[in-house]
Structures are given as structure tokens and as C-alpha cells.
Image (cartoon, rainbow, N blue to C red; front, side, top):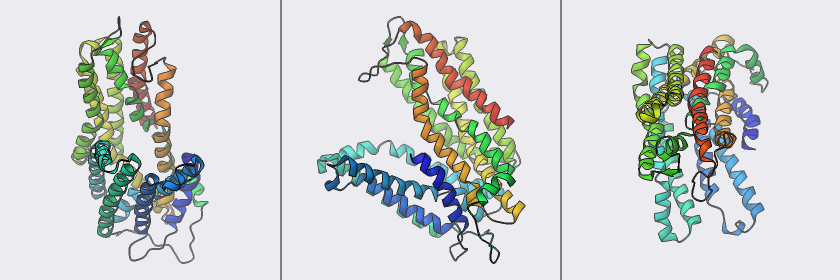
Length: 404
């Protein structure tokens, strides 16, 4: 339902932002303050349910839906590319601007993994997980909001296109962009394919390493100590390469002389190469005897995904620039609507997609223990299909995206 809401809401919010007048705080900056407030309020009240409504499933449902939508609308007002584009028109400065927030998000993600420990600790004082969740959500949201407000005052929009007298932004401008902004369509179309590479890469590595490297397929017995080690490695492959890639993205971009498209194509090809290595290493049996090759290929793919963030954002900003260049009008928010919606849609379908794929290839586990309960004789075939999902499919998606 939330994605359907976004399909209608995102163009409207893009229209509202592009319609904003240029004031002392700029054109798009005021909407980021609205975003800070709405996301903080929405997050806090999602967890801080009044005791009086918890006994009614209907009231709880209404409460959760309403404040989730408050949060969701707030996030739609937060499109970093809008600010980066108006802060500077220098492509190198833009590339540098996107790196800091990216690294910060990764760090917060790592800290967020300890959130449950904090909740458990607070629960020893409150005696109620409901209250503990509310306290942690409120504290985290207020701290984040305070930091965001401080940053908000430091941002200056220096390159804003002022609307001509009598010019009005119309919601139909969005559909006009679909006709006139070919770079926008190309960017979104290729993202339909490239955006799922990460999803497929991490669809099944935990399952794969458990039975490809840690299990005796004749008995189904799993070496849990070894599995614990490999699980940690897989987790590191989801975080460390991306942080590293973000840090080195600027020097790599210099090697490409600031050509975002060439760097972007290289990143996609590296992702595809890593996927191909995973698939070939499995079907040739090399991965089973040398698991390090599997993890190295995962590292390569995750590193390339992380490296691609800077050129990806920069291309998004240049797509906005193209609208201004070709029409003389600033429709940056409307230009970025399709891309934002696509990202949300891909995030939304990821979990369902992964679960559906695992069911389709016959992976069946005990809901309590997590142990595989299917036929052991089918496991080799299932492992091959897992490498198709994690490796071959991403490789194909990468090639399609490069061609587009």
C-alpha cells in the first residue's frame, strides 16, 4: 500500500518542491526542514502508541498507517541531490559532497545493529518493551533531528534558477519531462536492471555458505562453528567494501577525468564480473575447495556497488541540469521523482522477491530451528540455483544496464 501511495504522492511532492519560491533560505532547503520534522515525528510516534489504543487492533492499525505515512512523506522531501545540485555547479565538488553522508549512513547502520542491545538494557529499568522501544526511538530520532537541523543551517543554495514572472509549475510538467528529458528516461530504465544487482547478490549467501562450505550433504550435519565464521565474513562483505569504495571513489573518478558515465559503466561491469566468478567457481567446483574465491567475488561486487554511488548520484544531478539546460526551467524535484520511486519500489519488493525465489528453487527449512528439512539429494541442484541467483543473474543485469 505504501508503494502505491508513493506512486501518487512522489510526483505531487515533486510538484510542490519545484513550485517553491526562492527565499532567504533558498528554494529546496525549506522542504528539508519539513522532512526533518516529519521523519522525526513519524518515527517517534510509530513506536510511542498510547496505552488507550493498544487494546484495539483497528486503532493500532490506523495509528501505525497514519504515522508511517507521515514518515514516508517526510522522506520524499529529502532528496539530497537537489541540495548538492544547488550548492555547487562544479561536478568535482558535487562528487565530494555525496561522500560524507554516504559514509555517515554506513556508520549509523553499524551502530544500529546494536540497537536491540540498548533496548534490552533499557527494558531492565522500564519493565516494558513497548516503553523501551519508544524511549530508544525517541532518543535516536531527536538526536538525528538535532544534528540535521545544525547541518541545515550550514547549507547554502548558491545556484538556484528563479522562475520568471507569471510562470507556474504544473503537475503535468512531470509528464512533459517524460517526453523531453531523454537522459532521465535512460537513467531510470537502466536502473530498473542495475538496482536489483545488490538484491540478488545478497539473496542467498548465508544459505549458500551454510551448505556449500559448512555441511556434510550426505548427512545434512552443519559445522556450526565454521558457519558462524563464514556468516561474519558475509556480513562484513555487506558493509566494509562499500565504506572503502565510498572513500576511494573520488580518486577513481579523477582517473576517469571526471567522466561519470564511463566510471559508472566500469562499476557495472565489475559487478557483473564478480557475479560471473561466483557462478563459474561453483559449477567448476573451485568454490567448494577454495571458499576464498567466493568471498573475493562478493567483495568485488559489493566494492563496485559502493564505488558506483558517487557517479550514480552525479548522473542524477546532471539529469536535473539537463532539464534546466533544455527548457530554462528548474524542475529538478520532478526530474528525480521516477528515480526515487524506483528505489523505493525495489527496496519494497526485495524481501518478497528473495523469499519467493528460495521457495521456487525448493529451499525448505524448519521454522523453529532453521534447519533444512527437504531432500538432501536435491541440495546440489539448489546450491547451483543459488549461484544463478547471486551470480549469473546479476551479471546479466549488469550487461543489460551497460547496454542501456
